[in-house]
Amino acid sequence: MARGGERCADARFARYGIVASSKDKWLPRHGVDNTFQTTKQLRVGPWYNADPSDPQSCCRLQTVATEFSSQGLELDCALLAWGSDLLWSDEAWSIGFAGTNRPPLKDPLTVRKNVYRVLLTRGRDGTVVFVPPDARMDGTYARLVAAGVRELRGNGG
Image (cartoon, rainbow, N blue to C red; front, side, top):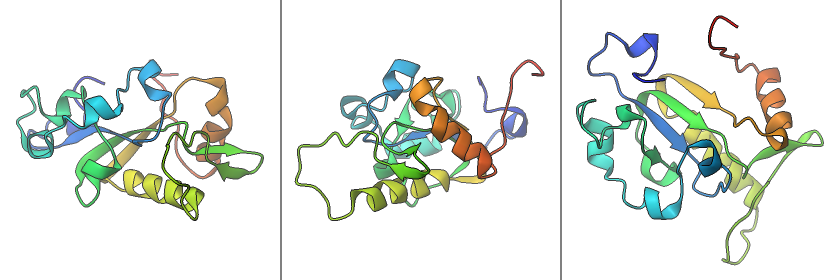
């Protein structure tokens, strides 16, 4: 997606961008750099407000906002890259990766669900969910479709 899709094609001031969980560790292998070293450099003001031609603009689809830099802020359309830190497995949500050295939270699953609630609600006009093509994500993909997320297929497929 080079310019935010058909819905934003004629909307010069529309804002669309990639959001992802800060805890996922698989997304960089799929072209979504949500690593701490990269996302800590995100300048939130320009990311949300700069002209689409500006290299810092969210519309360039080159940088990622995590739950920390997107909570309380919205885009016209959000592209959520689903991560490995909340997976559907054995008929329930589970924490696929809990990559932290901090003491465990009282209820880390509830925290992860809340992160995805925040990320899923960043798009005012809509949210597109990207689930990486990885067999470990198949259950999550199927659960999202079963919950009503419509599949988008390229090339008329």
